[in-house]
Length: 164
Image (tube, rainbow, N blue to C red; front, side, top):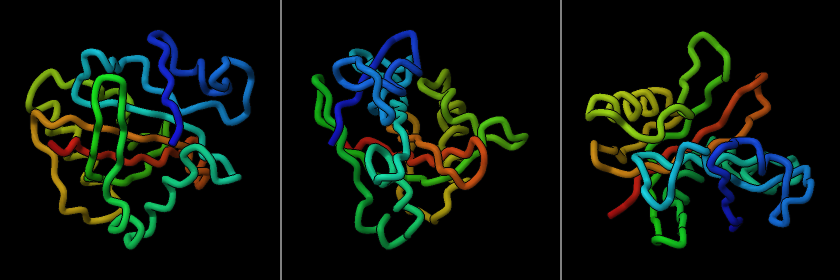
């Protein structure tokens, strides 16, 4: 239940700023600079801190527990353009800068069916849980990303598809 901020030329502006644009350790959730709510691509990516006090995206790490995933398999993300209900298709970790890093943050819009399918396939392959929900070309995705603190530069990522 946070506002999601957006600056079209920066993925760092709200990293340490509050709604009034003042300094804040926790910052606010923010959408990737390559996303556009007015003309959404295939994947909306939202980043937020994993705060040790449990705020921001700290609760994403609860998805390590399969029972929690089963009970909370849907995500709601409403914008000024539409209401959004999404079903989780993958929960994974990746280490930024590692040789085997999955660069999920580079995928906001597919150039082809194969592009989309490759992204979804990689996300499903890395998932820490076997999740029945699938996504197919034409579906709209929502990706939530935070730091995991398990390893240096590790990200915890939840990918969901919009339910029509």
